[in-house]
Image (cartoon, rainbow, N blue to C red; front, side, top):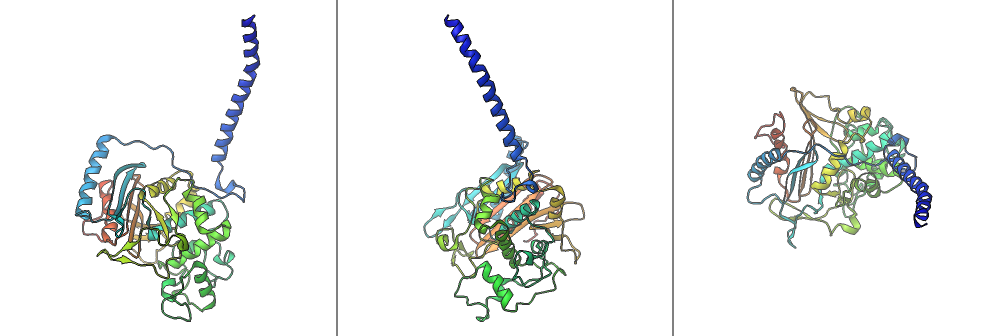
Length: 405
C-alpha cells in the first residue's frame, strides 16, 4: 500500500517537475534573448549598455613568466627607486601579466596607492566619453553626422557635427583660453561648468580658432560639449549616464565621475614632480574631457568590453579606428575618441594619453596582439607615457628607446 501511495505521489509530482523545468528553460532562453538584443532594437526608454568580454584564451605559465621578466626590467629602468607613485598594468587576452602599485594616494596622510585606489585619468576620460556617445549612436539615439545644434540649440557654430566633436575637427577654441584672462567673459573666482562654457560661447562672441572641418586641432571643449549631448539624449546627468552605460554593467566598482562639490577634498590629490601638492582651480568641475577617476583593473574591464563583439556594429566600429586628421601627411592620427599611429609597415598603434595638473595617464590597445597597457600616476612624470615602448615586447612596433611622449 505504501508503495502504491509513493508511486501516485511521484506520478503527481512528475508533471510539476516537468513544468518547472520548462519554466526554467524558458526563463534561461528569455534571459539570453534579452542579452542578445541589439542596441538599435532596444526600447527608447532603455539605455544601451556595455557588456563584459566573454572567456578568452588562457596564457601559458612560461609565456607569462618571460613577459613579466621583460616588463619588470623596463619598470625598474623607468621608475628607479620606487618613483612612479601610481600603478602599471599589462594584460594579454584580459589576463594580467604584470601589475605593480607604489607610492601614496595622499602624501600628507601616507595613504598608499593600491589596486583599489581611484586616480584621475585626465584625458583618457575622452575615450570613455566617446564610448558612451558611440553606444548611443549604435542605439540610433544619435547620428554621427547630426548637427550639435539639434541637441544644444544655443550652440553658436551651426556647421559642427557630433563626428567633428569626437575627432577634434570643430574648430572651437579651448575653454581654458577664452575664460582665463577677460573678466567680462569669466571671473576665475567662480568655478566653471560645462553649461557655463556653452553659454559663454553663445553670448560672448567667442570666435572659432579655425573654420569648422578644415583641420584637426585637439581641444577639450569638444568633449565638454559631448558630455552635454549625452545628458540631453539620456535625460540623466553625465555622472549617472556613465554609471549606467559603462561603469555598472562592467563592474567598474572603483570608477566614477567626480562629484566636485561633494568629493573634491576626498579624492587623491595630484603632485608636481617635486612632490608639491597641486591645488584645485576654477576648471576642475568640467567633465567629459576629464574628471573620471579609475583604476588600472577597472580600465582593463573597460578595454576588454571595447574589444567584445557586442561593442558596436562592424560598420560603426570601423569608423572609430579611421584617422580623420589627414590634411598633413604623417603617421599620427586621431579617430573617434582614440589616438593612433599608422606606420608604413601596416602596424597600427591605438592609445590615449592624459595630463591634468600632476595626474598623468596612458591607455594603450595593441589590437593585433590583444594586449592592454595602462599606467596611472598622481605625481607628474613623463615616464607614464614611456609605457608605449612595452609594445615592442609583443609585436613589430617601430618604437625606439629614444622616442619621447
